[in-house]
Length: 553
Ligand code: AMP
Ligand code: DBH
Image (cartoon, rainbow, N blue to C red; front, side, top):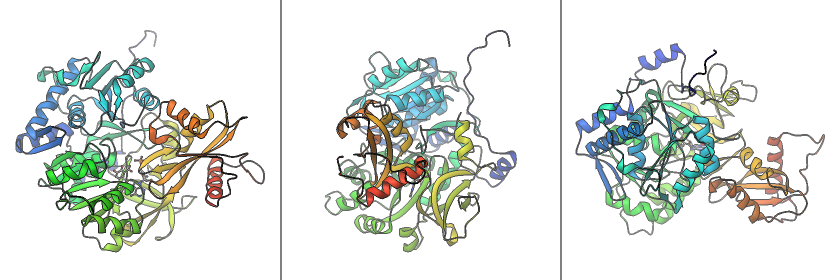
């Protein structure tokens, strides 16, 4: 090539081998549906049914679709081009749904960030996705996202287009967007990548998960059947809407697919959710274990009528049987355990399963074509009932992350199985019990934190010689994060180290809950052990009360 070519972005791709594609189509999993296709059909068939309730907004399916078309045309009129990636960082407000659907409609590709993410994370997503757009609300939970937008544009100049819900200042106001609907493209290829979801980042930085229309729609269409979602359902989003769980298991997308009503709770706690449950007669909601316990306790004292709740789903982290019993007793409705991952595979207990299964397992896969392997450290299958590594492939589990050869080499086997990193036991009937994990991340009330990522930020501190971040069992959170630090000279105050991590531009949930200074990492015998062994050793010593004189906090 002699002439300089226009800069082109890495194409988004998620491809299964041809024989799998043929099989998944023949089985009726992949039906060639797309997001704009089904949303348009609902607007046509049930225009006056309520689709989305949040804040002061009550949109019917017709109104939602009209807003989707307006925004879609507006995004293109503003200079975005089909194929462009757009970071969406919105809280539980109706605009989240309208914007995501409008991006699909314009063949733009949402990249979902959590409201908690800050500049370091958002800039990483923007670079990795080669994003050219960013959508935020002016404020959410007392944080001004326009400041973040300015920082992002300074760090990643490719993000040329910023759209703001509310007072946009120098940016484009979502409310004012408009364009010619005739400019809109046709519906996308059902096998194309619809959006990029964010991985919990089990090692190092978060990876981008490309999901196709066909595979994702299958996952929530089939989830609807297993979760009892019909046109009469009222589904509440209580967790952050960007999480894969409330998005797709069956989530608000499943609810919209069914023609049901979606109710957005501004916060996950009982204070925000209970009045809305009573007012909207919510029938289904997804929660993480600590929240479910909080709700169960609060339900006993609340003046609000929760009798419409039929199914409370709990997932994102392990719900132990005793906690499961408390949830059932406290909320007095059916419990459904959900064990899923943004990469694909989702397991549910079935609504008619006996109590021992519902209380004691994390369910079984959605699809008869979800292939599950439970293997030992050498990759050999273990007998049912024994604990092993969970590997999976299937009609809605990705075959690779976006633009990350190193991660893909680690996370996928040669024959396309995803290594989930979870340690499970498989019971007869295919039910799975999660028994831990093989990767070093902290599952803090459902938010996954990479130990490695936080260690890197700690090591950048001038008074830190070495650091290991470890998960510690926590009564309320399930797990909390503890940073073991060897100081360089005078140890900094724990609070100062926590502020340092925060100051590195990270989500608040990644700040270590606890900092413990140690003299040295006891590396026993030869003095060289893996980080993984080191973390396990520190955790064990801490739990045995042996990590020294306790000069931590
Ligand atoms: P992510 O890859 O960030 O979407 O997080 C998915 C991970 O969350 C899974 O691989 C599990 O480690 C964990 N997880 C999700 N649901 C459950 C559950 N019900 N019980 C135990 N762990 C869970
Ligand atoms: O934790 C998760 O990522 C998760 C949990 C339940 C998920 O992605 C899902 C259901 O779809």
